[in-house]
Amino acid sequence: MYDIDKDLNEIRSMDASPSSELISNTKKNIMREEDEVFSRRKKAKRMHVARFSKILAIPAAAAAMFIIFINLAMPTPVSYYSVDINPNINMAVDENGIVCDVKSSELELSRKVSKDEIIGNPVEYAISRIIVEAQKEGYIGDSENILIGAFGDDEHNNISKNQILSYLENSLRETIVLLSVHGSIDDWKIANKSDVSAGLYSLSNLSGDIKITQDTTLDELILSIQNSQNKDIEEFLEANKEPIIYKAPVLTYKLSGKYVVLNWDYIDFKKYNYDGNITYQLISAQTTDELLSNPTIVDEFTFASWDIQPTEYTLLRNEENKDTYYSIVANYDDGKRIIDGNYVIVKGSN
Image (tube, rainbow, N blue to C red; front, side):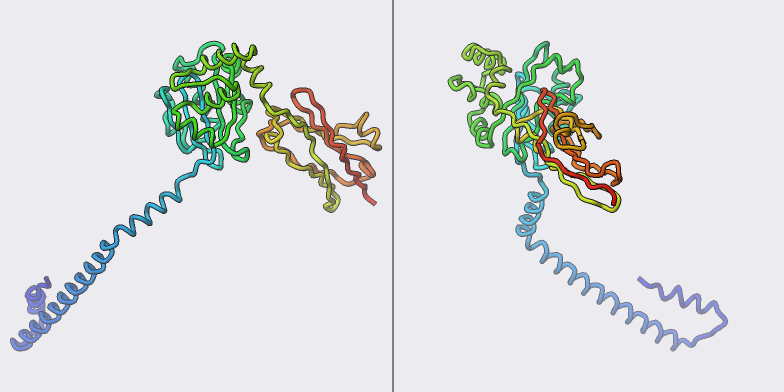
């Protein structure tokens, strides 16, 4: 509270000599003003409490909105992956290929790999990390079978066997036998309801008459399939794959000042069942016959089927490439060489 007597004592210490009546009136005025200020503060405090009470009176609605906002922020799985070694690990993956949940039936990811290191990372990295740590923990021996199951629409279910292998060291690649199966979201749901691995469920479906239980291991299932089909498991899976459709890109071009910009289309190699490296060769010749029989290689680009693809090349427009024919050859790592037959004729400078 305001100390009026202190201020009046200071006034008395000055040369001025106020009368007793002036002092009394001044004191009354100041006390009245202080009471008014105190009253206004109490009123404002009551209004603040009332407003706060109204806010507290709607906790259910506020909580519901808060839950909605949380749900909107949570990633939505669009595909699922299973990793079967002997225990199995299941992962939910969002539309960007990022792991948003992971569950393990028996295999702990070890002290070196926690769920936090798996969730939030690309699924191909997560799978390769699980394989590496499983080997370190003694779950993987020589010639160990590992089954990767992928479940979902092709648009989102696009991680390939070779893509996972590319993350592993050569010594580990030579140690394991990496197998892969694909299925639908319905396959995933049916397997979960039966409390069996979705990967083992899809693999058993390929064999037709082999049933699995909760206790069936990957090695037991592989042995049953090999005995019933009289084929090695890799040979069996290869025979059940859709055939590869080999494609080469279609070439077009546009003029940009003194430059010629060659463009070609992006190819979804996963859609055509190819998993591996491709080398594009940009070729040229003075005639169409020469383009097919004895072309000049202008440039070449090697990339993985799951990786970023080159789709453009820029040439200087001059007399050297006047009336020159250009096309692209796609060379696949399995030996296939495809040329679309499409070509462009680039006109040189005038």
